[in-house]
Image: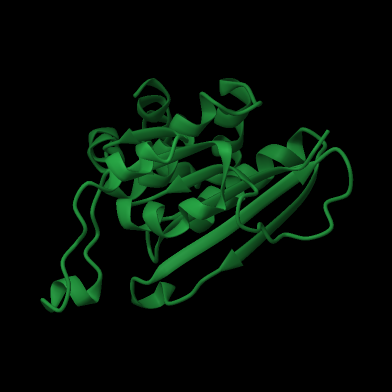
Length: 191
């Protein structure tokens, strides 16, 4: 079996670290060798946050994913998807939240948020799963559950069963937030 590579890209505070823990635990539970790496960037100030999850039946030597190697790219907002799309394999799957989080240059008026990002990504020929994860998370009970909505959408395309992913969410999410996150997972899965 070759190594499966998952990149998770978001903005600080969106829950990408929990998402990487859930996906890493999922692979560990199936007996894979797993490497998880976090690249925080300016996460404390709303900057880009990227995490890598790599797993295989064989030994995984490095946690780092290079350009063109990601099987899956989960993005918490459109601009992050545009920023990291080069890391996705030509036959990879991009799961992207349609939310727009304005970076500081856009907020200050020094730049404009690009239009048509989702269409541009689709034009690259990769499989694009675009969904309003923020709306679905709010419907589940908390806008903070965007990460689990994206995992739900991812679960339709990965090698793990829906039940296996759900069990990992149960083990990784604190009990007081579990109902919201399970609902978020279901909404993402069915989106």
